[in-house]
Length: 197
Ligand SMILES: [Fe+2]
Image 1 (cartoon, rainbow, N blue to C red):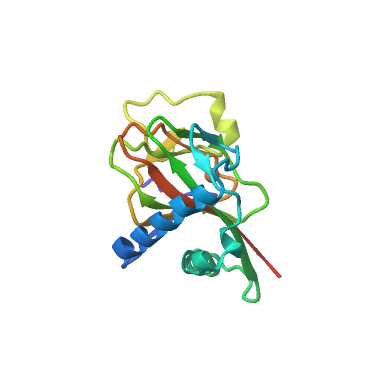
Image 2 (image 1 turned 90 degrees about the horizontal axis):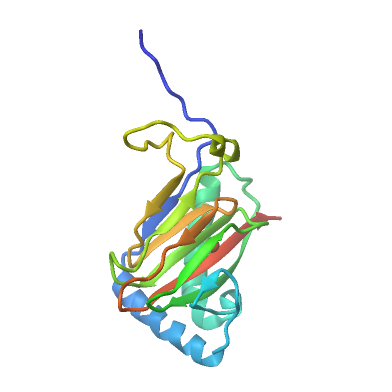
């Protein structure tokens, strides 16, 4: 007798690496610190002890390159999931500079189809992982008596960030970032994308 599992309602995370990540990241890093000089107060959001820029990268010509890449990746993901062909993918993006000791508390992003983060600079593995919470809320009623968590029984998944890697996930998927325990800033660009007419 063969017992066959079938995933229902999977929570997908997409990642990609830019071929030119070394030169691209040094440009982005410079722009990130320039932006912090221009907006030293930043905004208070999910960042704990870190600095977050206002959501304005999409309006700034110097960020045209990352803006284009974000939209391009999300458009390809949307099309892979049979989104309508005539949609416009609009985004908002911002910078996070998380010094040693900083973290991002658990949150999700409302009113967007995709959210994501691109890691510009960090020190692995001490910089801390991004983690995702099980969105199957009813599954929190009890835990499974396992020796080792599986994709089905786990309640949280950690992914170690990597310089030059872009992560995209559904905006409704709860996530956070662990404390940066390295001695370098963790610098990333986060975004939300909405596809509509
Ligand atoms: Fe987020």
